[in-house]
Amino acid sequence: MKSTLEAMKIALDMERKGYKVYMEAAQKTPNKLGRATLEAIAAKELEHIKALEGYCQRPEADPDASKMMGIIKHSEKKDYIRQITGKVGRELEAKVKTDVDLTDAYKVAMDFERESYVFYKDLAQEASLPSVKAVFKFLMEQENTHYELFQETLEYLDHPGDWFREQERWIVEG
Image 1: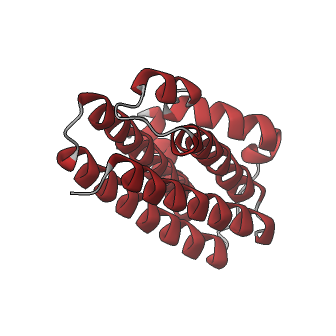
Image 2: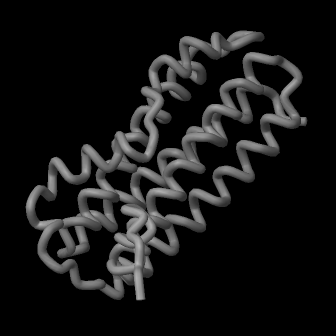
C-alpha cells in the first residue's frame, strides 16, 4: 500500500508526462483539429497538475478532496468539443485529411489515458481514506472522458461519414 503522499506524487508525475506528450504532439501536427484537441486535453492536465501539486506541497493525513476536485473543472465531452470547435471554427466544415502522425499520436494518447485510468483505479481501491478514494475516482472519470474524446476525434479523422452518421443519428433509407 502506497502512502497517500507517495500516490499523489506518482499521479503528479503521470499528469506532467501527459501534459508534455500532448503539447509536443500539438506543436508537431499541422492538422488544426488535432492540435486543438491535444491542446484542450493538455489544458485539462494542467488543472490536474495544479490540484495534485497543492496536496504534495502541503501533505496532510486526510486531503481535502472537494478542494482538490474544485481546482479541476468538471468537463464533459461536449465542453471539450465547444473549446475545440471554437479554435478550429469553420475549418471543421472543410474536409479534414487524416494525418498518419496525428493518428499515431492519438493512439499513443489513448493508451496513455487507458493506463492512467487503470492506475487511478488501483490507487482508489488501495486508498483507505474516503477523500483519497474520491480524488482518484474523479481522476478516473477525467481520464475516461479524455480517452473517449481522442477515440471520437480519431473516428472523425479516419471515417468522417461514419462519425456524422453516429453523432447525428442519420437515417439511411434504401
